[in-house]
Length: 460
Image (cartoon, rainbow, N blue to C red; front, side, top):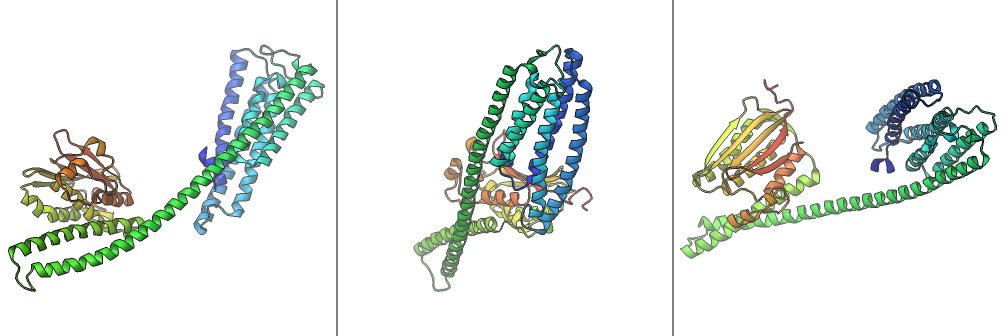
């Protein structure tokens, strides 16, 4: 419904009417069968079944027309940046108006063959008023209400004067109500007032919803624009900071290497601290730059690369750090997994970041394992450790930018809080997903998926 209130694609609205009509056809056929065959109500069943058949043909034709205009709309979208051109918009608007008007005429015919004013289902006209008020303008909605009043009012008056045959519902309602002037006047008055009130209320609510939707869309567009400005600002600032840090780090490297003269122990200690802090700050700025650049561009330089080699390369990068803590690294890669499409550097950095986190938060003598296997149309990469785990309340938040779990902060004070956010961005851009869970025996498991693409048994 939300999409129908203000949809740039009118074909979507027209298809919605077609789907509703299939429901109406089924209801008409079932109601006729139950009333005539099971309840013993006398009514023009043959005429009603014929109308149902006509509706089927009518709906099939409309569905075919809409499929044709859908193809035209898609072709127009390929050659133009707009969602629908004026050439395709106008015919579909006419189809929608025609459908609503034709449905009113068909409903009046159904009511005529099933008791006229004596049929309580005559108030189904109200549903058409609601649909018209949602899909069309206020003026067109009131015109549809007028058409409904004329069709039903004319039907009742013609039956009452004998100019049109009346089909009584013997066994259900009184047979002579359509001849009672007082009843007919009162019924028509209530009927017509109801139609216009429904149109007034529905169009008012629809208009308010449209205005709210426009306001939300404008607010969302402004937020996206501000987010882009913020990202560009962060990109420029962090790029400048990185340049200054690189210069500072280069000077510190020169001093630590004693290329400008020997250092005493206190000097080495102080310069070493400054160097370590600068290195961590550089890592933070580099991660922020990569994340911001990825969010700004939203593009990947895809290529065919070996996921197997990428995983092994990431393992080699963390091997020394794991060895320094006596942590055993295990890996298992499904033999069918090798070449995939994507950004090799980003995938390798993602795997490396998760492995480094696993080693960082696993006590000495622990175990870290990585497994890659085929999972339907995806490749699943799972990294398991015997570390401190993740508090349950933080499992869904650790992928947010700058967020770190409490136990992670307590274990390791230094950390950017960007590694997992970067991983989520990379995996998401590749069409996969990433999540974390705690192991029953302790530690945690980080899992992400990547589309397998052409990676299948046999390595096509």
